[in-house]
Image 1 (cartoon, rainbow, N blue to C red):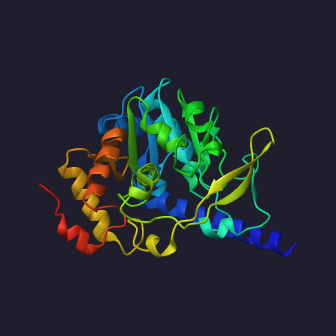
Image 2: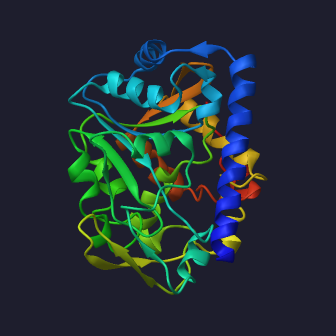
Length: 308
């Protein structure tokens, strides 16, 4: 009973915070529309038939008339009926992978568990025609032509980002592109696909040794035990998305610009970027060969300056 009261209080506080934030944005930020967003996305280089893996900050777009659902529709307009959208819809009740693994009674159920990833992923998850992968910590959702292929086998993958995960299948899609809507080069889970693919040859030991089996129910209520390995917490403290790693985010920004791989533009009111997935993945591999990863130290960055 006490836990339920705490959850209800947190939900009420979050609803109040979001409403207050929406009021501030409505009165102070530029107003943008679904049609305007779709046009901005086209100018950025998104075309019909594209498969997009999207990482986003909704509030950075300005005040969107129609809210998060209008952004989802604009993205669908941009890729067209033959395109595909892929968004992270992770559910981490423990707050981290390790803490979630430690929850003895946790069973992921896509029929009742939402996502902790923000308003745009929430709106996407509630949209018609969206498919969700079965995974206890890193469930991903997709809409469009490749949605079934991208999400159907995640619970059979040997690791979160490994073979047959949505990330590995996404790389092989035609016209696959990674889209950052109003975000830096920090919070991009696409990076982890290379870590799982390289395994022990990756320059940094990213994962803890022990693999946990976490229970999941699929959309029909069948139970699956899915392998999950927590991140090494010490290594995560120096990762590119850590607040203290602005130097690493800036390096990757300049590196992918200098390599001619990152297209930059404005979507709504948000500085945004787009990188072809296969080229992104290949360049990450070349950087890893030079000991530059999303965990690189300042000394490692200094040893390999961005090549203009």
